[in-house]
Structures are given as structure tokens and as C-alpha cells.
Image 1 (tube, rainbow, N blue to C red):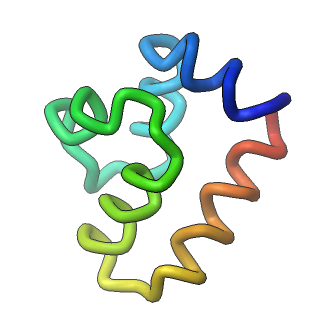
Image 2: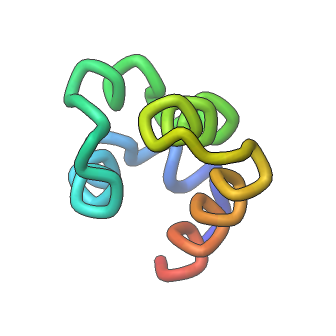
Length: 65
């Protein structure tokens, strides 16, 4: 699946993102609004990981759909 489809259906995918990254609040996910870079940034902030690690996690999550 390409990221455009995830972004277009963010309301559905935000629940799946919440399952994956439970520290992210609903408000944070709403602000992300499907934008990949912002999602990685929120993951990085919330979990205290590197940007590369956050990007890797997003890529792995995306590949499952």
C-alpha cells in the first residue's frame, strides 16, 4: 500500500497507529492527519528514539497494510 492511501483514509488507520504506538494521544494522531513525517516525529518524541528508528518503525507499520 502506498502512503497516499493511508493519508486518504487516516481516520481508519489512526486506530491502527494507536494500537502500534500506544503512547500517542488521539489529539496527536489527529494533528498528524496521515502525514508520514509528522507521524515519525511524534513517535520519536514520545518514545525517545532516533529519527531513523522512528522512520523504520513507520515503514514496517506501513508494509503490513
